[in-house]
Image 1: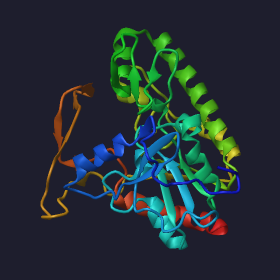
Image 2 (image 1 turned 135 degrees about the vertical axis):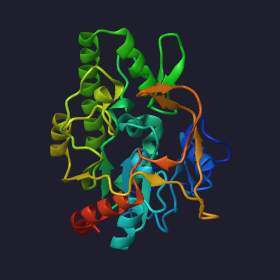
Image 3 (image 1 turned 180 degrees about the vertical axis):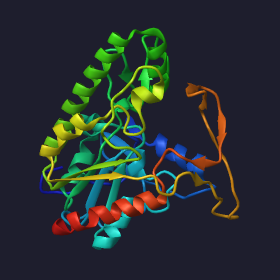
Length: 316
């Protein structure tokens, strides 16, 4: 691959050793009654990825736009994410490179170079701010397949929020505050590295139910992490803004809670998730969910696309 050639998306003879195929397919399996994510495969010699569809009509250099982010960008429970809506409005094919559970360092891993190549062959990119839980630190190491799954000192792999909950139960406030500061500094460093590798116009996007203006407390898990993007505050956003061409801050709760409706029968349905929350604490047991109150709703995606449209028109 050369700088003047677009990344190859042809399927190789053998599957690469590393891939990020599982999470999106897991979403599709769990959410099939509600939505079809039209997942398609991006392959490179080093890695494979399951991308949110529909697949862009063209990936010729300079003919499409891209979006980076986590599950909010992927668009869980959303028929048409803001990425697709924006591309349609601009009459430009849209490549959704949002992956569940990832942070900025996911895109800068050498084996994932294809993703940066795809971004740098596009017209522009929107980058939704990632969860701070996606950033590893001296106490929690992230897995290669999800940066919101932590490897504990005993080798056990647990969700990030479970690890932080255990930290609240076992460490003192000074220790927790020190680890949070370390995590935030590493997050800014990794995010800055990602932004510096992108050569096309880039729009930083705050897409959340809350404002960046929050101060963590150490009495409960929610007061520590807040809602998505967890742990990220105003000072972190301000550190990243100068590295981008523009910034959109979209705080919205419209359409939440979002009831789950079968796309086949139009009747209410529920899904099974691998965790439960009781009295504000995460339990690693299965539970049933009949509505979405965590991920961005379809209405929130539509409103964000409208906010992005006048900014991104200049590069389309």
